[in-house]
Length: 450
Image (tube, rainbow, N blue to C red; front, top):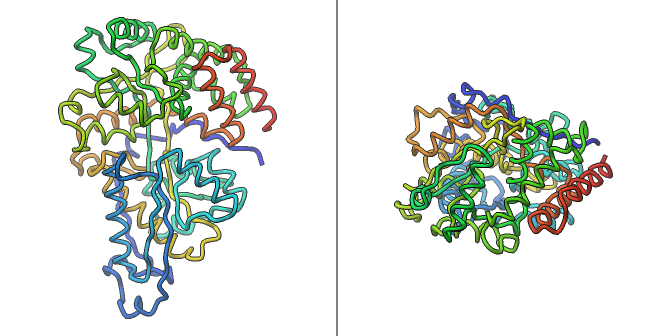
């Protein structure tokens, strides 16, 4: 089957993002569920149900994502109270560990009952291998499908069937430390040439311009994707991936060349190819780097996370990735898209309970995560009904006004091509390949995948 690419989220309208529909939670059709509107339903009936354990694997550890972890725990406790016969057991891993574990357990068809997945190309092999269960039945209950931002469910669908329910919607801003900018007398760059000037000024003054942990590779891909977008417009990279174009397009080669120009200007933290994203993030949050490009999932660290010093949070702002002179891109175009969603394992022994849990979790996450964790959920948000930090509102406004949102490149690609892409990103930043070799290797991998 030809791989599908979720190329953009043009359907993200302002109207779609400012209308929250709190769906009911009547799960009476589910034999393993209690009536949520009855605070647990008939306790005698629940007592007669066989006790079951539901395994849930997620990627929000308490140490690095305290607000996320707290909300997850609260939702689980609430679900267990409403379903006394169900015990939810968590396994929590960091991002890269999670991806590796998911791949290992899927090879032996030992997926958790409920877990997290990314959309599009990441999800498709699991669907094609009959590892994820379709969730359209859950979406039809209480018209739940209408609660999601337009375009998000489609990102987790294959052949018009949904295989995960979205939890996040993200764009990737360039966050920066205003105190450092003030100290070195630099201003927010509007063009790529401005960015290079800012980098030179900071570097020559002894300050690391950009925190980048490129050992994880997708972090470097964000920088490449933006340059490809600003030079060639969203069409250039998207068409190369969906095979209506070619990765040897001169605009994509030029984007690779600009990456190496940034490296030559000492834009990135020393040893960036050997640092993890978490290590690079720590340098930014400790005031040792001026800029950090990351998804809006990191907003809690700059808004609501009380473990982060208020002085630092007050100094953090963001800017749109600069335009490239002569390029075809639009400064209101973003790299981003849906983040993680919840799947149910096809071979789960507690599939009814798992679907009930996914439905309940998604509904509650949409209500709580905005205000309590500074997360943009996949469900619609009424900004008039929640108390949000200014930085969060600013990002949400940018999302409302986005001219285009291009899904992360490695998520668009099949797993094999994505691995080639990520390896080549690291080689490009390390200047182990030329821009032309970078593009040609991508094109060969994409051709073989057709």
